[in-house]
Image 1 (cartoon, rainbow, N blue to C red):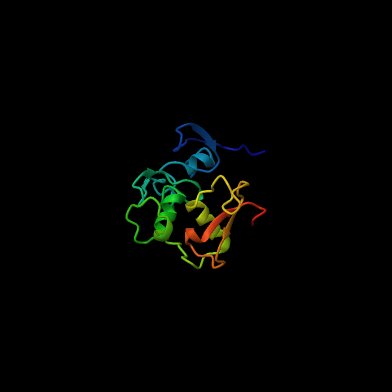
Image 2 (spheres, helix red, strand yellow):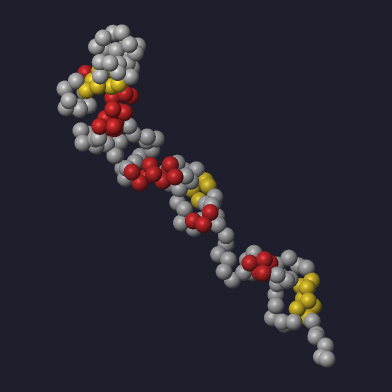
Length: 156
């Protein structure tokens, strides 16, 4: 039986001695070959980036390290929604880029009026029971607060 001749080498990754049959071997393991500047695929690692929206320095994370441009989804959305963004934190109402004006749905219109028109203690028609529903007076569903009233279930 032939005797196997191992070659003694020192790993270029960790500096620990190892035995190998291949004379060209430079690393003791796959993990040592993948780390550090001696890896031919290593491009200097991922460096910190600066967020173009808020100016905060951040470390890109996950599988999108090389393409991540913003520190958070919030910063990315602010820049995407308004190309003329000049540092505003958030726009509301007609200054918001997604504002639809009068072409909004009934549910969104109710939400908008609820925000502007606080609920009173009593129904605006019978002044007896507490109100539950926001009702449109003219059935035209305008954004005008005076065209809405809070009613109890009996009056609605």
